[in-house]
Image (cartoon, rainbow, N blue to C red; front, top):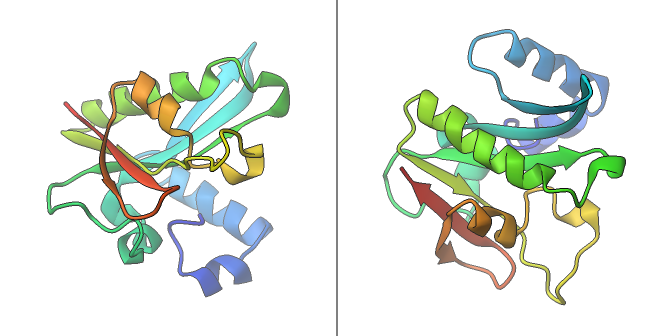
Length: 155
């Protein structure tokens, strides 16, 4: 819910309030993201939607729109610790592209973090890493900060 709510609202709902809001959103039409499973257990998550669904993203100067073309945005990932470094995020990006395409998207964007010294703790790369997106065919289209490229895949 981080990208979907004004900061004060997100903080006010922190914890159970945001979980309830996400459950409600999940039951109201287009899913707010994708789950990855291993042996019937959920082990990963990817949030994606049309960019307009993310008001915080829409207000960001750093991640401002590149142009007026309609895009779907992949805004965050979570992979359970025992399943990290196995290509699951890459698989989630590819699944997100397929899902967005199925729902009419022509462009998918991501907002990864470029680690300053080649590595960043997992907690800081929840929007993904550039290499993960590049491996799925995304190209950098803007960079307003040394550590925050905007990447796109046009279909």
